[in-house]
Length: 280
Picture (cartoon, rainbow, N blue to C red):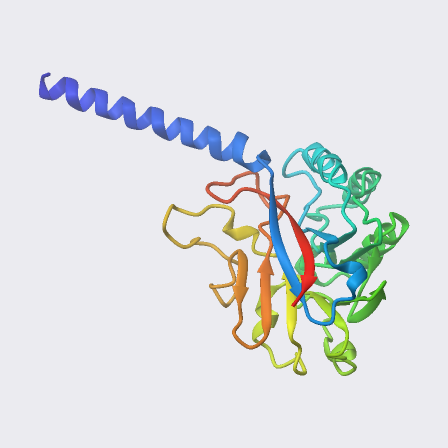
């Protein structure tokens, strides 16, 4: 083969690989949902909850940036798994206008609910532009409540022996974890929901031991193989995705999100997590 032919074939081969990768990143992986199964050992868990399932759904980002019919399809798949508990960890919309309320209402007609309980918290995007529009958060909270999702805002709820603590969003207007952590009771079977995992590094925990379920990062959405995700919206870059032992009695789980800020993913598939409860 001549040098000219070799260069030509290499060029077109590289171009073809690039086009295929771009197509995959844009049209395939953003909609290739993965159900991730994990064990969740919890101290003081009642016998009646051993073996029950808890599903985490995070960052659905209903809006105009991708076809949210995919979220409805994902919810329908999740419903078939018949979870005992469902927790939502924030960012229900990508707010641009009041149109998102109608879109969210359409999606919430297919809300995945737990047989025992369904709980949620808000994320930064649920506070509108610059995470500073209280009326947006109020409207979304109302829609979630109407759909059967109990919204926790620096509060807690005990459901058949599982005590779920929920923080309001770190970047938004009402972050005040002390309101609930001042009454933290370590004799209960506790689980904590916190949209932004950077909160793990703040002095707000009052001795909390147990699981923390977060979202927010989307795993970076694009991650080169064997390398770290180059873009993560957190100060602590180790809080990217998956299970992280904080080495002080707390275990953080960062969900990769079922939705996207933008319709692009590479090596970071969208995720719904299913935890099986057990005694620690």
